[in-house]
Amino acid sequence: MAHNEWSADAFGVRAEFTNLELAASDVLIIGGGINGISIMRDLSLQGVKVTLVDKGDLMSGASAASSHMIHGGIRYLENGEFRLVRESVQERNDLLRTAPHVVKPLKTTVPIFSLTSGLWQAPLKLLTHGKGKAKRAERGAIMIAAGLSIYESFSRVNGVMPRFNFVGRKRAAATLPSLHKQVRYVASYYDASVHEPERLAMDLVADAKATGNATVVTYAAAVGTSDGGVLLQDQLTGATVRATAGIVINASGPLTDITNEALGRETRFMGGTKGSHIVVDHPQLYAELAGRELFFENSDGRIVLIYPVKGRVLIGTTDIFVDPRQPVRCTEEEVDYFFNLVKHILPGIELNREQIVFRFSGIRPLPRQDVSQPGFVSRDYRIDESVLPNGDAVPFLSVVGGKWTTFRALGEHVSGIVLEKLGRARSVSTLGLQIGGGKNFPITLAERKAFIAKNASGLTTARIEQLLDRYGTRASELVAYLEVNGDVELVTLPEYSRQEIAFLATAEEAERLDDMLLRRTTLAFAGELSGHRVEEIAQSMGEAKGWDAARISAEIERAWAILADRHGVGTPELVG
Image 1 (cartoon, rainbow, N blue to C red):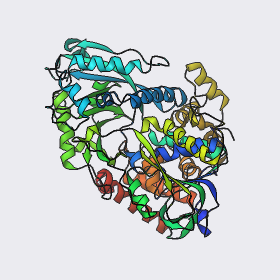
Image 2: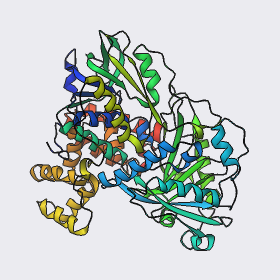
Image 3: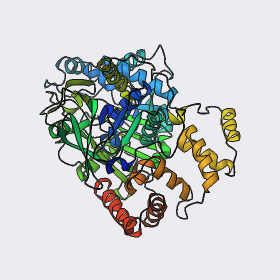
Image 4: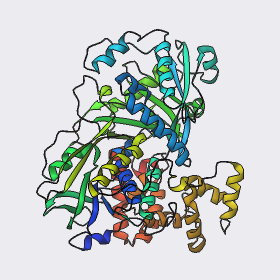
């Protein structure tokens, strides 16, 4: 199949657990976050048979708690991580070309309060790598200009972005009237955003499955080893099966040490930090941002961000050392922190808790390091090589670190190690290879009209455009499906149809209702849920999955419990 095809059998099947043993594969990947998915895609394109498993839904762990940015990490320069910055900038530029349907240029604005502040402290930070006790001083205009010059130098060869620029407060205030009056300069440069990271991940999975070499099984937890294989427990039924492979990869992010322990190996690789965000419905703030991100140093020295996403405003993030064995939530103290950082830079904006439509928190999969401040923990990655405990010397790789922007490079790196161990040569490079719905994505108006004409059907032009915007060129498959099966609008949510929900439930293997609300769509993130909408979505999904009335009711109850506990979304009675 072509890489942008999207068929109902393109994802894993629960039937795998009806047997006592999964079919053997060349590689078993534990962890369905962005790094595990990237490794699977790269390997499957080389003709390697891969099985990926996750104890929950795809993209339901650390990868679900991103800042929705694809960026080079300008602040990593202060840590001396020049290799990571160079790689990140190059990967950002590549994603703008290979996934233009979901990765877009993002104008980033940096408010600056002084000219020379931080000139002496920055070198000390770099030399001590966060272990020193240098007095904090905010970054001034000279230091930021130097950093931006270095930053942009990494992408000159294949650059796709305009150059950075500086303006004074008077010009900046013309477009940002709420800006703090003590801001002296405003710098602007370009990075990139991904408003639907889960959609990008699903496209990567579809690419892998299209090769015929990848199998995905969700809600399957790795709980031990047996005779050179890994024992998996079905989290829906409790059944246990054995999975065997020539190589096993632990890509479970911040849970890497915990997964290793379950498999019989004690490690202390991870030292992750918690990052929380809130999403607010604030028309004034949304309008004032005018599509750009505010990226700046808060009063405590933490780099924070404010930017518009899906008609809302995303505010983040914190950086707190935590125990990965404990669940993380966005606390009321963190909400206060977010309100204060907005007040610090935009005193003309008033926020209150009623405007929060969604909150989320996750643990960054960072390596354990001896640093005094969370911000100095490296965002780079490394691969640990050993053998599977209690096995037959099966190679066992643990992925330590990694971030959203560099997922492709990490996947290629790990794939290279695996190919060498398997004695195979690389046949395909993922660099420059278009992703899912980004393949032949129409950029110009003429190309867009051509796509609509090519997919002319019983659907209206507006509906085809809507699907193109939502799924990229993979919309062609859905258009064909809807033409045959109908496209009946949801009564409570006309932007979706019953058949579209059914298609997502089957083609992308959404096993639980919260999978649909949180990851196959952005309805929860954007604060667009209500009691009646959730019921109608559950009914549509249930028809496709064969759920009875009791199962549908249980899924609704479970989804609301998760939304309330993890995301601060009120009960159906409160949201309507």
